[in-house]
Structures are given as C-alpha cells and as structure tokens.
Length: 217
Image 1 (cartoon, rainbow, N blue to C red):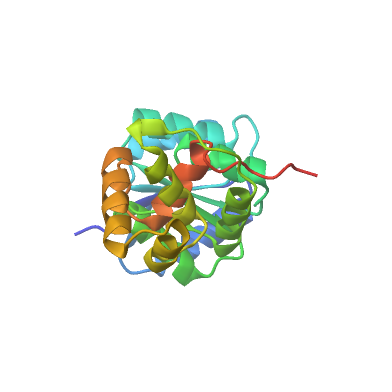
Image 2: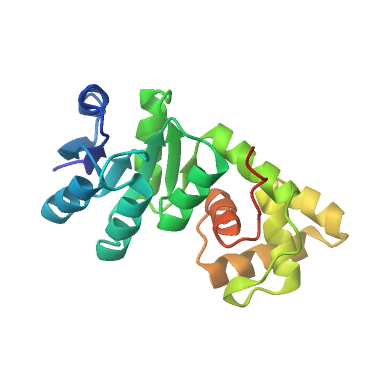
C-alpha cells in the first residue's frame, strides 16, 4: 500500500531536495513529484493527482496562492499545506482564501510537517502557532461581522469567540448562556458552514471577513 502522496513545490532546489529527503524518512508519506514554480505545480498535480501539496508562496511565473486556487478548483481532492517563510497578514489571507488547509513556516520540524500533512489529508486544518496568533489578533481588531452561510447573529458571535481561542465554558460565561446552549450553537454553525474542527473554524472566520487583519506597516 502507498502512503499519503505528496508533491513538493518550492523555487529553491536546495529547499525542494531537503524537503524530499525529510518526507522520504516519514512513514506513510510518498513524494510523487516536485515543482519549481506555480505553473509547474499545477501541471505536476494534474499529472500525479497527489493527496497533498506542500506549497511555497513567493515563486516566479505564478505565486503559490494563485497555484493553490487553481489546484483546489481543478482537483478538490488534493489538499494544500503552505510551507513558507512569510507570515504577514496578506500572505496568510491570500493562502487561506485560495483554499490552503495548512500553513507552516520553513523552520517547522519534520514532526510538524508530518502532522500537517496527515491533518489536511484527514480533512482537518493545521496552522503554525505564529499564524494562529495573528488570526487571534485579527479577531480582536475585527469590526461587526457579516453572517455567511445563513449563520445567525448568535452563531457568528460564538464563531468569533472560538476564533479568539475561547473554550466552551469561557463562551458560556461571556455570553451569559448555558454550556449546553453553547454546544447547540457550535453544532449548528459547524453544520451550516461545513466546519470540521476549531482550527477550521478560525480559518473560516478569517477567510470570510469575520476577522479583519490588522493594518500592515
């Protein structure tokens, strides 16, 4: 049996080769192709139909966010984990809106890369802690949110509190409602928005403008 089939995309050959070497040592992971820019990535994914793409962002000819959007639209069964040195708000937002389910920095340890690949392959999200912090900061700076996917105002309020890292007990105390009511709101909003877990909820809130990124310097 083959493992999770992965394509590695980075414009620096030494980085690509290093990632291929690292992934080759991970049990349950099989590298099926590499690419040096976004255009090549789209072509390699079409040829090999991998489960997961490890995607750099800043590349010649086509950037990683654009390539991610094309891959996700043409091959919805292929998930994307961004692996980049950039954690600025514009890069994070572009990647998440393009459809990336994971976002790691290039100093991530092999175990973290392995965990992200496995998580997105299983339909979950995996965000680097530094990215998670930026999303939480964005929530704190957010204005009144809109309500996508038919979410009620109370469900949006619960979603924003989840994105702030609040537990169910914290949300109940903040909103002055019972823990059972919080759980009902969470179940309803997860069902309406197609959310799988709390990490996915943070991504959803940010990508739909419920969390506004702070102004860039």
